Image (cartoon, rainbow, N blue to C red):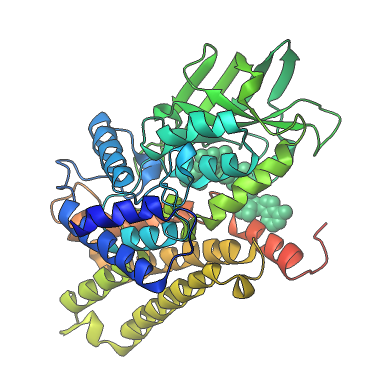
Length: 415
Ligand SMILES: Cc1cc2nc3c(=O)[nH]c(=O)nc-3n(C[C@H](O)[C@H](O)[C@H](O)COP(=O)(O)OP(=O)(O)OC[C@H]3O[C@@H](n4cnc5c(N)ncnc54)[C@H](O)[C@@H]3O)c2cc1C
């Protein structure tokens, strides 16, 4: 009943400022809803994060889960109703924080939610927002990101995929690589070069229909044994001009906006791409240390080991408190600062946490997923390898530090 009342209130109060008590009521509603609607585990465990979803059953399960969360107003919360949202500002951050805390399955359409939606909201036309946003929220259309190419990763502006205008259409030729979720996506955010002589102003931003003739997707297998990301080949692919985002030649500007959202997704709903929050992971690590014995005592009773674990715990708490500054304009230091900080520090903490877990396990850390003797089903060894993706994807840590230095701290540019 309370949930229903709140829903009505959300819709009615669209344009009004929210009070603290309304925010508290929404937070309680999210907590209760997540507790009551937690889905049962899948027969085959879900991959550690949404990058690796490949099984059909996992996909169906995760799409259903996301659709349910959308229906419950935990997704698209602060997006206008005309675009399929629930029309209430200020509540998305609360919903996202509660989803992360609740330890529920991740949202499969994390690229759609964390990159496409914010990009369209800033740069899309009215028609594009109305057409594309609702199926992003409901997970009816999964999205991937076609930015990186074999010769253009950190140096993204070197991308060579070409876009040639042909009447009301564009003809696309080239290839993309490391395309997460490419094999299960309906749409791709695509950067292509319309002018090879103008490095920055010669790039245009498109939405590419993955079902079009000329699109070939080839999965790439990682050292974890999992797949998820792909090579995508584009051969004479036709894209109608109304699937272009923003002006011809404005692609670099739009891409920077997408990347800011990607890096900043830590504070938004798109971030919920991982199966557990850092806080949950560190609590599991403590439990592991308390139940693993070495030299007659538990690892937790070894002051050196305990010191390392507590240090990570403190840093996780600090990053969570730091992220709260996004909600206070005077403290967030501009659009880039917190997202970049969050990405650099968060991805490195995740690596350290898994590395500590392996040292806690000692020799048993070599037992991997699928081995009946592996502790916690081998999740720490898998996590150790998986967390190396976090310091590369979305821009490597070195690049993030360069950007922080140059654009946030105002240091001289690197050559
Ligand atoms: C798990 C995963 C998922 C991904 N998903 C996607 C996706 O969905 N879509 C997509 O488009 N891309 C995706 N990527 C690609 C990702 O964006 C690139 O891997 C990343 O930008 C780095 O590019 P690169 O791999 O070409 O490395 P390179 O650019 O070749 O870099 C190699 C090394 O050199 C360092 N380096 C390069 N330039 C500098 C510099 N100027 N200063 C200091 N150090 C430098 C880098 O930090 C890195 O350590 C994904 C990557 C991973 C790992």
